[in-house]
Length: 358
Image 1 (tube, rainbow, N blue to C red):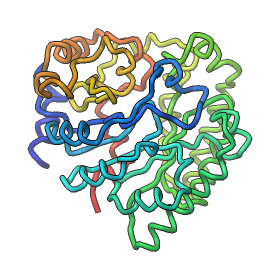
Image 2: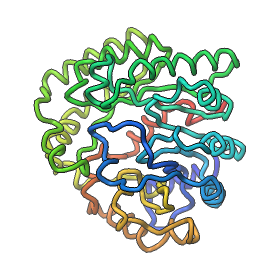
Image 3: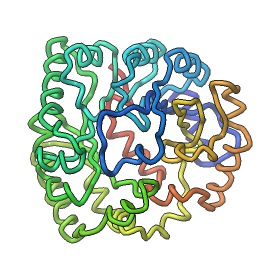
């Protein structure tokens, strides 16, 4: 165990207000997107989309020195023209890199090849459907077949190059339109050679009042639970790893998110303020990707200020103090599965390319 990981284990237990540098950092590389998914907060918070400049990224990443990196935010990362260069720079410094994508651009030969050549560890593909019809209902575009085509192209490029990475996984938001397709999504993953599918609850805070009211409407939770159980069975048969057993185990928590009964979340202790930070495309630092949309929660700007002064500055110390005392200060946190030690360990184990290198 390296010294930083050992220090983070100690900090998780003791929860000091001043911490060593983060173990994990997330950079928002763009706020542009080529889709308009109805459950996404982007349309509510992004008015003037922009790309993260490569030099801002490079200089800030080198100062932070975190060993784990995700390039993600309110937009589609593959739209940033400097993305492959960002990945290559991080990998040259021994940093593990993960990217989420909607997958619509992977059928472009040059871009798919760049993802293989860059040394990327994990590519999370957001595919919330097993059929074109369901995909269109959620993503508002007819892109299902091109996403599948892109995955197949990327797999061929990996095989041709004799490479294991990037590891591919599906990331699925559970919605009323797709929950009956949970078993079929797992079958689709197996057919495409993807051995990991992660199912998550939708974020209902901040997506607009009308959508907040309707996001869980008409969702039959008894039927959802049966589909989760069926998905567990199919995943076992096909040797696809999922977190569906955790979804079943914590089903009442998931249900409370959709029907907005979040009282059970209000006093959980999230560990992320001790472990990670999120850097927005503007350079604003916040504890995680769910909190950055409210700039009043920014701990400071690392494009203009010293990172240490931001990471252990007054705002971050106050956030850690409030979480440590179980006074959850942020409404959006009540819409999130608690990032406790068991949850973090399970998530880490389900990101194979993110927890070790080739």
